[in-house]
Length: 277
Ligand code: MN
Image (cartoon, protein in one colour):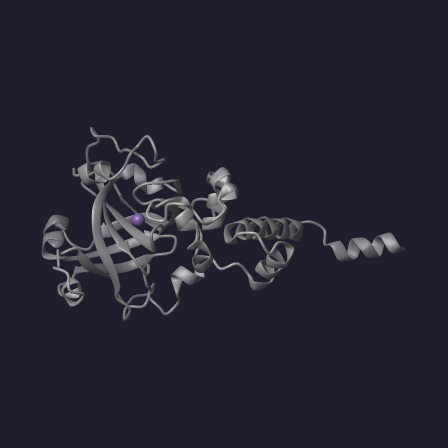
């Protein structure tokens, strides 16, 4: 049980993230939980978490998992997270990890070894995943030299997440193909609009303290991560040239919602024709 680092990094009076039960013991669950949280923070990354001994072992994967066995994805080993964290989706308004967390995939995992601790020690953990998006055989391999190449001392935190070749591997780009939440079905914009409408609507972009990591800073990255369709952003731009980027984004989201809603209703065209008769 090692949640000290997790707790030390967070102020639980300010973040909606779970604190984790200090008395929690390793569950004798018949299946082991795993999840991937898509996290728009300082940079976009995917937090890959697997249940082991009462905590979620965690790796931050900058580019997200790849179903292609030839594409090895860097996975930085990060602090253990509480089991409850595996259900978390929402907005972290400030502080460590400030940004938006989306529950991108969830399911169960099984080690393809008898001794998980020995496999972790060795730096070679083979496993089977059974999620909505990620399935089949995978491996986490600790790597040496990645940190050295960039000049810093390798602290053993660099691993690679690799898909094994099986019926679930292929060249489909799963992060592009299935970008949304398995919990709410929503995008980052949807989660923001739902979880933090005040922050979302009042955010005008340019903040006075660029050194402070706030949600406003994070939202500036949203357009790159979830591009607004060109037509929608062009309309927003002509409507108000003085509007900030995030205000435009909010309008576009609203417009997109309206469009989606009207899609399910009677189309406007035929109705007009009926009136003419
Ligand atoms: Mn993260």
